[in-house]
Length: 69
Image 1: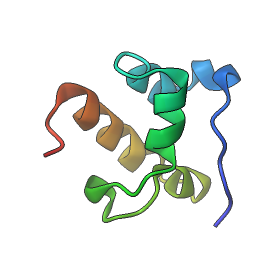
Image 2 (image 1 turned 180 degrees about the vertical axis):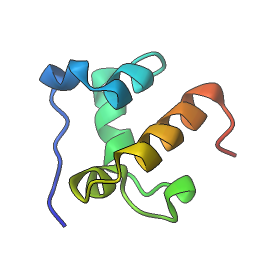
Image 3 (image 1 turned 135 degrees about the horizontal axis):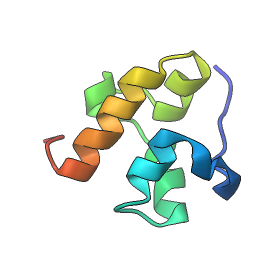
């Protein structure tokens, strides 16, 4: 899959806005590039490239709300 690199210019995307409530720019970058159990171990960035925006948004919201465990 393609690689999505977080760039602060992505501020307008809802996923980045959700994550920035709890994370720094570097934290958002790390979250996007780290395996996520709510996404069956996939990288959020890979799923975004594949068009699974809604799944990644749900995982981001769960992370911020603390319901991801």
